[in-house]
Image (cartoon, rainbow, N blue to C red):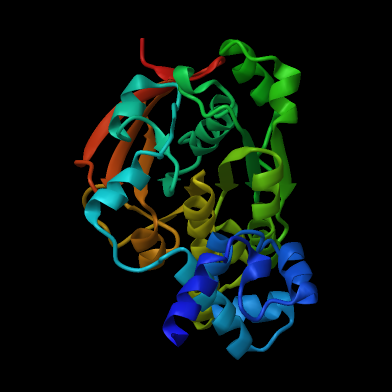
Length: 324
């Protein structure tokens, strides 16, 4: 009988306020911290929720367990996973070659990392995606807005206007649909990502851009003695980004810097910043380099299901395009 009552109780859990251990004040604090739906609670850690709602960790564990039971989180059949994959959207880069390399464009529920040297056009692709996400679904967009976390003062509204006009969008409206925040250090960057959930819901955000994801961590933590704490903080930040992609079905596009490797005698003497944490974390990892004139070469380094390959594209006044 007790089990039946518990099952009946779980069936009635339809919102955060219905969860066991959540009172009126706790529900309000959770809402302020961005925990407004069951999935956001279920994907949280006890420590995160305890800090956000100012409750003890045992209570936080009980609340998270309740959310996971209500959502029936656990093992599921591959066909269920396939159903969820069918909700994945894709944003065109503006280049058919580059889209093909990415399996149809930059996808939601995933993190896409472009790394390369200065002038390799990582930021140009970021601007183009910020515009293209606003296009209707039939034209390669998702009909949504963009959050742009700018860590190196690289965002240029003038470039957005050029690109928007080139794809037939109203330039002023395109600017209104992009929300930019300048991150001044790694802590600020992490806070912006953690607070993004509220904006995503309110403004119909379909794309989150971080340009660049490692620059502030590299600046704040210098020397070998700082490597471990830097990687720990970076790891936490990356998990926040992935959770946003999963919970809200948005695309996350990150640019990353590269460093010189003087020990490499043959091939490209550069390596992306962030080490194994960045390497293992990114769903899609692209190395992009400058070629002749306005031509760029992108190489897919890592993907869960796509083969390695290369694509050639160009950067023109109107934006990212195929080479003519």
